[in-house]
Length: 281
Image (cartoon, rainbow, N blue to C red; front, side, top):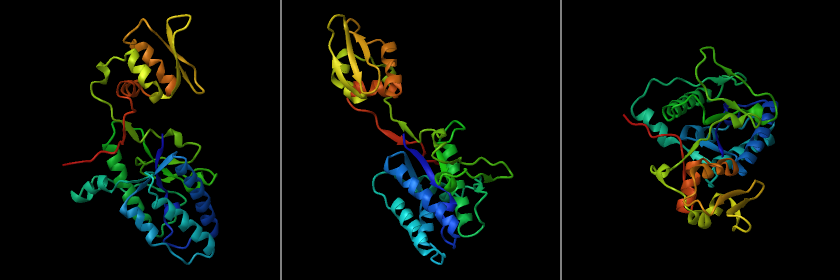
């Protein structure tokens, strides 16, 4: 699953001259982030406000070549057209349209300077957190803040958070897997009532990653083979296939049972949609 990330202000905010060491950290972090996104391990959160940081970059840094390398990385990230850039303006527009006041400015990483657009970042992340928490029923986070230091191979920063406000976790390649999936499967409401027949499996086993289907030879069992995983067997005498057999596929395919049943009955994996919800009055 791709993880959903916001850029930390140290990465994003180049609206004032940073020192050479900070620029080096940012460039290394962006290189690692670009690789994460290229292999579809992460998607990037984008809003109008966050994009404005890129339009107001300060060009007076001592190391101009490093600054423009950072600018090039940021431009490439925010110009991607491959579905890895997730524009969420429509979700947070509700807060401005209805003058919602019960969100708070998001805590800022300790190593951030109180310069540039840091207040805009804090306010925008506060809005995103408000919508995030209205969209899920648990305390888990499905959005994280990409820590510049963590993605540059150094220790992950902490927040300056004396009031202990809830805050998106600062993540690095080493702890990003602690985030929940930002996408959810769109499952037919009646899928739990549907049975899986042998014909369903014969026709659609490849949809869930099956490589081949062996017919019964010396016994009464079909066998579906998976690359790098154990095989899965089911009996010719059980039609429809018992639910307990279908559930064995969860460990083999890493799909939830509802996804497996949908794929085997429909011939395709169900769609996934972003967990963020459109809020209304």
